[in-house]
Length: 265
Image 1 (cartoon, rainbow, N blue to C red):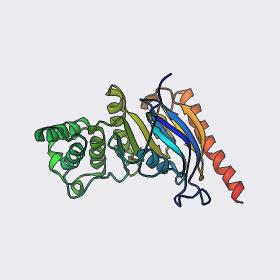
Image 2: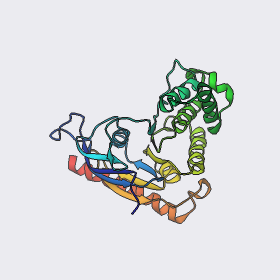
Image 3: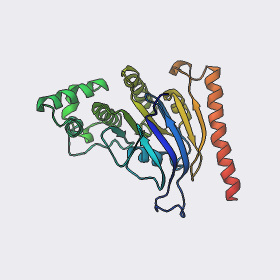
Image 4: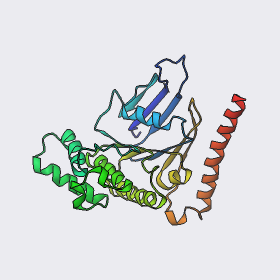
């Protein structure tokens, strides 16, 4: 039997650390195999980012546990790379220095010249030129900053990559380019990283994921879990199987919204 890289066992979460208060997540159970690209999909505010932060070790479950390779996650680790919507780059460091800093923290025994060499290689992998190394984040466009953040996350070679709506603030053209870049990076790696990706965009989830997890409204539970067939951007809106999946995902989300509206009435 294949060992699961992530096991989420009966996880509930409340920011007050008490189950007596309002829950954000309730009884989440999920197992993920190595190399899966999992999208957490759902309405804004349903707890997708909170679940991602729990896997990252940035928050602790109020109840239940999350296991990484059968070992409980106790806190943040460089074995899990994180990419946020706001890029997460230190503004006083150049793009290259941001990547180098992460490398120095992860690979402490490297010779000094290797850090810059690896940072430049990481920038090249996300389609950025060598001159970006010396530019401050404020000198870069949103798309360039997010490329740097993704370069940083891939450079430290984590087995798990956590991405919290990384393309949400970008224009449509830049967003499409970065989606394609991410898929290319992920596909070319052997073994593939396990990716958890938060989005509220159904089409983005279908394009990127090998598996989609739909969370209901708070207190969030998993209301739908499905594999995604391999597709391309060209056939995404023509393939009947994909269109059927798209309609089902929208139906599941709308059904949950309607159920909560009735309960709140």
